[in-house]
Image (cartoon, rainbow, N blue to C red; front, side, top):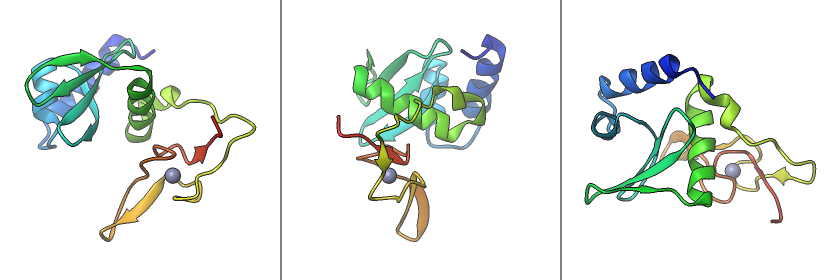
Amino acid sequence: MLPEDLFAKLVADQTTSDHPWSAAARRWEMLAVFNQLWETYMLTSSGDVFIDRDEGVLSPANLEQRKVAHVQAARRYLQLRYLMPERPPAARACPLCDGSGEVISDGRRTLCGPPCNSKGWVTNE
Ligand SMILES: [Zn+2]
C-alpha cells in the first residue's frame, strides 16, 4: 500500500483541481478513481473501495466494483500502479482495444470499458 502521506497528497491534489470528481474527493476525503452514471468509485489509502451514489450515501464496493476501481486507479495514477492485477498466462488481448487498454471514442482517447476495464486483456473466467 501507499504511504499515508503520499496518498493524502493525491487526494489533496484532486480536491483542489477543477476535475469533475473533486467535489466527491472533498466530501469523503478519498480518491475518486472511476465514475459511471450516478456512481463515483472512491479509494481509501488501505485499498478499500466505496461507492458514492448521487443520494449522498457511501456504500462498500462489492468484489467486482473493487477490481474495477483498482484497475482504474492504477491506470490513472502512476503511484498506484501496484493495484493493477497481474496478467494471467492464459489471458488474451482485449478484442475491443487490442491490448492497449484505451479506445478512441468521439475522437478522443479514453479508457477501455468492458470487457477488459482498461487492463488490455481478458480471461475466460
Ligand atoms: Zn479493452
